[in-house]
Image (cartoon, rainbow, N blue to C red; front, side):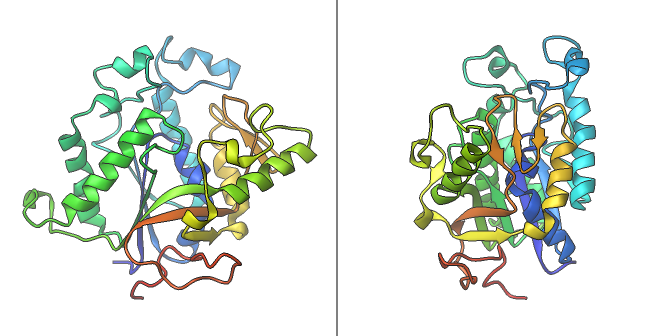
Length: 296
């Protein structure tokens, strides 16, 4: 078994590339085992390609299957070969946003039996035995129900997988050494806002101060900055593998909300479980390796 093993738990296809694409490509290149566990097929995504609009949930409802194909292309670009869906493809459906009909769907991930969903995740944790798990914060980054539910499932699965009394039929207990939450530091967001302004674009309409962005994380809460700048081309290619969801224009990209964001080669994390490792060489004293401080 590869000595370094990383598990990422995400809500929809494309979330992993936007948040962690450079990190994933870097660790694959370094010989680590990288596993992606995706919780839904992203059936409710807005489609940016006009000729594919009929795939939408309100029409043929075939977008989920198409996004499996997009995910495979993205993971090929990043070099990731271990790609799984929580409970199997289609077990849980994209929940849409709170207050929408999709959020009331009986298969919506938001409405999933949490014990059942956690058991599916525990089986993966105990099989691959990751030292490091990456997921979202308790608000799912920006409040999407599926991101929040993915957070709940991932955190509960880490605890349950370490408990020998929990479902021994799912494999031998395993304790994950470190858990990180994806984040973007306030200072980095500010640099992105300024870069977009110079290019004549905007992030949020009228927003010039990153402190006004709800998901901005104060720099002193950040633990790690993974330098994946050598893998930006792979991240760019992976983002382009999602034409129904992402528009890429040079160093920037936009989703269906048309908010311009910078394609980051360095990706940032908050450490919420485990011991912080030695600082990297950057000015903030952040780790530069998610495995920092762990045995070789």
